[in-house]
Image (cartoon, rainbow, N blue to C red; front, side, top):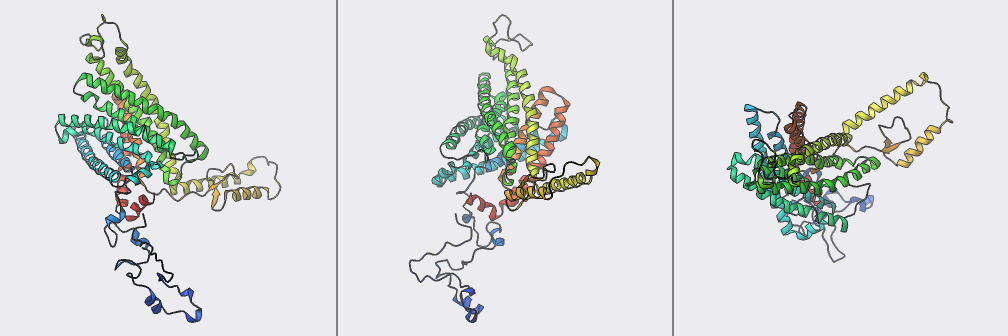
Length: 530
């Protein structure tokens, strides 16, 4: 796609083609034409093959940032449908997950709980509109521009397809929690069940087609390995969380059992495939450092399968225990009156033993995954802060101060063997020369002056990847809620509250940033050039 507002180059088979403009430097200094002559010699738009009123000059930077529909820019020029990107569904995941976090705020009571429920319902309906709009745009792109979509499938951008079933799954969870506020309970549960089976079909596509494209068409290297490789697999884990959410609302015990078993299968398929990628990605961070600033928030993606895995397995384990209490897992469907134990006269079966063991085992797994999620949240937060310009400046100034203090106290220790004059400067110069122009000392290398790294980039530019930090943090927050439900420990209650306040703040900030950029032409041009 050509630059918005720039004319197509005029081609002519004649050698006497009229130039678009005359440069005064092409004339001898004694015979340079006046400004009036130059202006008169400029061909008219009609002679250049341009529509009347269209200027041959490229648009100014100010014109490129005009809101859509202003001046000569039209909505059709942006080709939003043709360049619609799958990463928009990350916004559906994050905004819908924010509604779930608000609604599940731990230990909320009375009017406060009612107010949170109303706010969460509004946010979810808002997210439902986003999801419907993006699905329409995706279907239009596939239908109207199938060749372009096929080309995109051969690139790394197709990894974002995993966001489609995940966004739909989050909307399905909302039908269980918020649907009864705007429709009948039966209709809301039916919608959630329908979305679950639709999501299963999309997950099957997400777990197969992107992987084939990765192997057959895409090129990946270890030093540039993206965390986006996890997205197709995380869709399985999110679908298992949807199974845990809608399970208790199934119309019969047998269907509830089937959905619960499907949730375990989805959980295993997603978690164990993601578990094979996470250690490799961690080693990539250790060897090659954090991703560049444009992908600074991508480290958060790894938190997604960890947090959602804990959230899903805790719900599935709890549902399994409830199924045992109904007798569904007992041979003959009989339990001792007033208890959750199968009748002692009937031999214990593997299925009924699962009902006894699952709640405890899944709670243990939830504890372990929650701890791992906390550690990765530290890593992801460090990656985001690393690319903030002010934070980099603070680190550099702090390291310089520490270096000056250490140099000022050299008399406190015994003098070490002195290097030949100029040796230190020579080594530093060689390191700087090897790093190339524009390099500066690493701010964290005060104890190794020979380590020279490229100069830090200025801040982290906004893109849809910022939403990549919202939903993973949603999953950790939801797993914290589940641990509080199972244990009733105040520690998890307060951790859930702290996480919720932070998440809502970040989510609203990113949402505002998104709206501010959506109304600029330059934002949409990035999709056309990608």
